[in-house]
Image 1 (cartoon, rainbow, N blue to C red):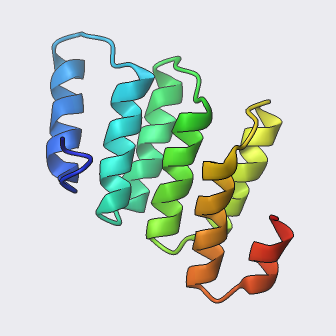
Image 2 (cartoon, rainbow, N blue to C red):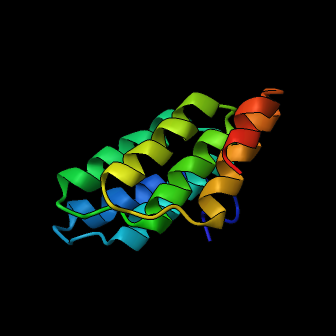
Length: 120
């Protein structure tokens, strides 16, 4: 709900409540909070969640990376989006059409058609 309503503060508060109650958040919890941050152009917070997820010994999957790349796309952070594609490959996570679409869109928003075309 927070993700769809662009309520990043509520999403982060919910995640903090989970942690405060000594419960273990799942990748889905982190992905939803990351998406809420992306929808509100809170890219720094989205990246903090990616790092926090790793700190909680959760392994990012393609959905997680897609959420992170979408955070970059919505915040016009094309270099970070392309960097995440490389990190995915290094982690043996195969980018999918959503990954590439978000990265291409991040490049497009900055008028970087050549970089976008190189992803095709």
